Structures are given as C-alpha cells and as structure tokens.
Length: 68
Image: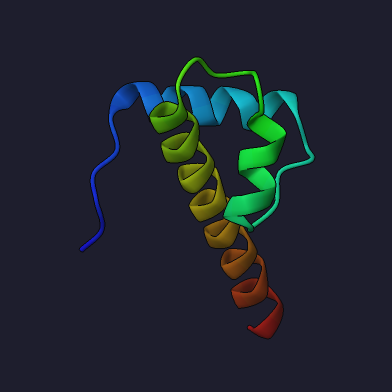
C-alpha cells in the first residue's frame, strides 16, 4: 500500500495540474517546476511526488485503452 496524502496536497496538486501542462512523470522535473510556488520543502516534495503519481496513472490508462 502507498502512503496516504493529505487533502491539502491532493487539492494543490489537482489545481496545479489544471493550470500548468508542463508537469511530467518525473519527480525531479516536477520538483524543479514547483520551485517557488509552495512555501516549504516538505510540501513541495509531497506535491511533486503526488503529481508524478497522477501523471503515471494517466499514462497507464491511455496505454490500456490503446492496447484494447
């Protein structure tokens, strides 16, 4: 099982995904993109990780649809 993210992290990540389309599946890239958007290192890292996970799940769904 994975770690449970707080509602604040989920809400922030989903809002950022709606605004910007530059996020990728890579945690490191997302962390750099968040740069000064978020106040603390911990929140920035958790949000970047959650965005990476959402992008990976989105990519897997697209692949599943293509293979069917």
